[in-house]
Amino acid sequence: MVLVTLCLWGVLPIFLKLALNYYSAGTIVWFRFSFSFLVLFWFLFLFRSGCEILFRPPLIGVLGGVALAANYFGMTQGVHLSGPSNAAIIIQLAPVFLVIVGVVLFRETIRLRQLVGMIIAMTGFYLFYLDRIRNAADNLNYSIANGWIVFAAVVWVLYMICQKKLSVKYSAQTLNLLIYFVAMVVLVPLVEWGEFFEGEIAGWLLLIILGLNTLLAYGALAEAVECIPLSVISILITLNPLITLSGMWVLTTFGIGLLPAENISWHGYLGGIIAVSGVVLVVASSRNKVNLD
Image (cartoon, rainbow, N blue to C red; front, side):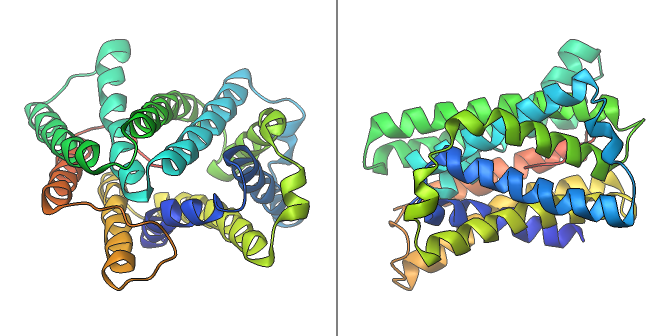
């Protein structure tokens, strides 16, 4: 199950970039949450329980929904203004931030291996950044994109804190239902409704794929948590940028012109691999429950 989540999140930035040819970021993110909420609601209503949470939602759950909505929107904007590979690498700051917040706010003990992992990760991020800023078509847009992605990483940490506090009382799917609903509601002002009427068949197909990606990735993750140690899950999920990098490399190398070439040099790929390796070390040494978006 965790491999399903790994693959789905690995290809997600690529499909986001494709969908951005047809729809705005707000429209895409709203549809993803709406699609996931409707399918999960009917599943829980017909076969399980948990829909009651919508009538008396915990305040911290509402905050978590707002945080995840902001995370999705920031990530999508980052993909739009830079590219799939850049977004997939930079968003890996999120688990590093989560460890820092655990130390600062919850007085958790930081381990030597985590410090080493952070240093390795920051070195990789810097090498990757140098390559991208040198080869980016528009440095201003690239800088704005990174701002959006860092914002997405920060609000993801807020979402994780909310999820951690609620997970002792509610099941994973029940929490997902509430979070999808809250995100769907708060994102309504960002939807460009006319885009749904203007979208081509390819655009609608991409929206449905993205909706299924959200639903299946989180569903598979929830099932995996019951069978596999969280430490193993965290490490595997952290590897998803390597799938994104590989996918974009294949598209570029074989001249498949679905997306603009990213022009990442070997320095950039090396930096990305180093960054992911450092994050894996941080996550593997952490006692936090880390589940990436």
